[in-house]
Length: 167
Image (cartoon, helix red, strand yellow):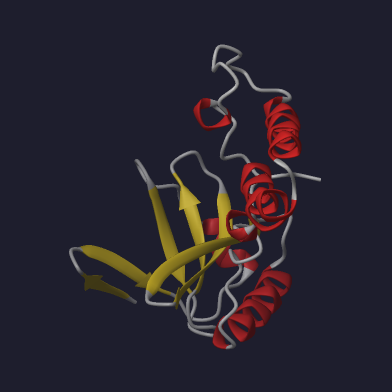
């Protein structure tokens, strides 16, 4: 069944199966998605290059997202459907598949931890000479691996100033 939605055609299939997926023709340009009716938001995306991938379209925190589960035939229809059901369960609990991927954005930077240490421990409890030594040492640690060596000791102007620690 094909219907028009916001200016583009949407093809809704019954339950997706391997024979249907094998018969899919690639679009002239871009990609097309055929949606199954068994799991809401579960479908198969076909690109103009001929690649076929299982996708899950969902909405979380007011934003519409599309998650690629895996490529066909590496992923079977049954395995992709099972993964889609488990992802939908996590989504209904408020945890999207991209939450773990972008978790690093909320973690503190090395520069932020250094500033926090100086504000809470160095400045209130140490002598001025020790404060300057600690500042120099923290700036030296944060400067390691900095691409731009012409920043003159000011860590804020370093290109890596906002990088997060990756362990």
